[in-house]
Amino acid sequence: MDNYIMYSAKSVSLLQEGEFSIVPSATEISVMKVKTLNEPISDPKNAPKNGKVIISVYFSKGISFESAKKMGDKLADQFFNHFSYTKDIGLGRSEYIRSSFVESEIISRMEVNYSIMSAIESSDIENVLECLENNNLNLNYMKLYRTALNNTDPIAKFMILYSILEFILPGRGQYKVCNFAVRKGYKKEHHNKVLSRRECIFTWLRNKIGHTDGDVDFEQVKALMSQNNLRLAELTKSAIDKTSKL
Image (cartoon, rainbow, N blue to C red):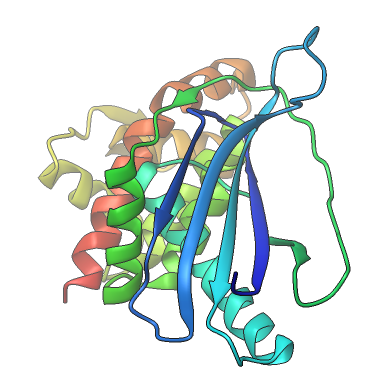
């Protein structure tokens, strides 16, 4: 059996468990094995608290550990970026677990409290690999998107997604965000008392935090952001897709 290096990334979402094998086009890599699971797995009394994606990258014979590690680190991070982007699942940073090249094991544990079951199919893994090999999306945007989705604070998630969207869109100011949202079917139906203007739901909520007028109900804003995070994620993703095709 070829030598391998194993990596993992954790998610605030629970995942549908499964195992998949894919064959990349890179000649140095013989196969990639992907496993999705939920943790903790050793305590039957407690429900799982977070999901986890593990990939094992098997390298062709003759490659040194140094070369394999350098290639594997980059591939793992890119894979988790594309996986997160394709499935709209937040993932934490890529972590090296162990390798058959050397005797070492590094496992860190993180516990969060969230529960969304996300289905994973073999076609999903194939789509991730195809996207990864075509490299047709901006990796920096995808990494920011992945970070945003893995945030359990609805306000932080919303603000990160809005910042990504505002940065991606051409032009100046928040008008471009509202105009883009209008083109996607949203309306400027919310009045900003501080700036005396009509805004889309996303800019209006963003400014409830960024430009408070003294009578903001933060719990209400938090609830509204939580309700609109999926819509904002879809809007941000559509902007990333559009930018990547230019």
